[in-house]
Structure formats: structure tokens, C-alpha cells
Image 1: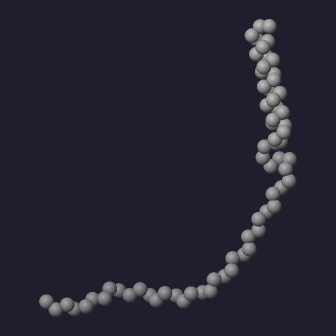
Image 2: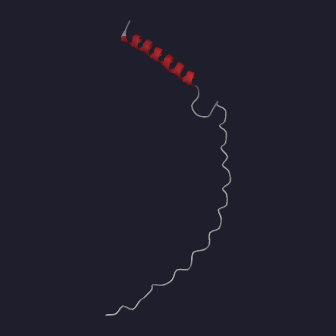
Image 3: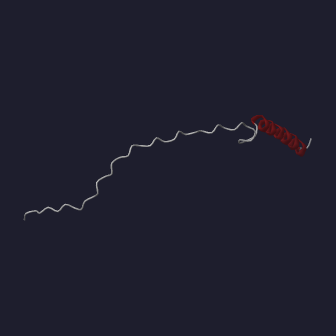
Length: 66
């Protein structure tokens, strides 16, 4: 047997093995699988209204004795 025929036989064996593994694990992705259930989030509860913050005032200037 020449090296080309041995390589061809080994290549065919590897190809059959790869195809068998690919067939065993099935299609990649969502194709062929049941759809995943959609997760429904509950509506957020309205928070109690906090009183408005007082309006900011200007700087306080105090007289300092010299």
C-alpha cells in the first residue's frame, strides 16, 4: 500500500468519526430544540413620593472681628 492510500483510509476514518460526533450532539443553536420559556418580570411597584428637597440657599457670610 502506498502512503497516499493509507492517508486516504485514515482520513475517511477520521471523517466518519467527526460526522458521528456531530450527529450525536445534534444541531447547534435553537434549531430543532423546543423554544425556551419567556421570562416575565413583575411590574415595578410605585415608590412613595418623597417630599421635595428645600431650595438651595446662597453662602452664609458671617462677620468676623479683626
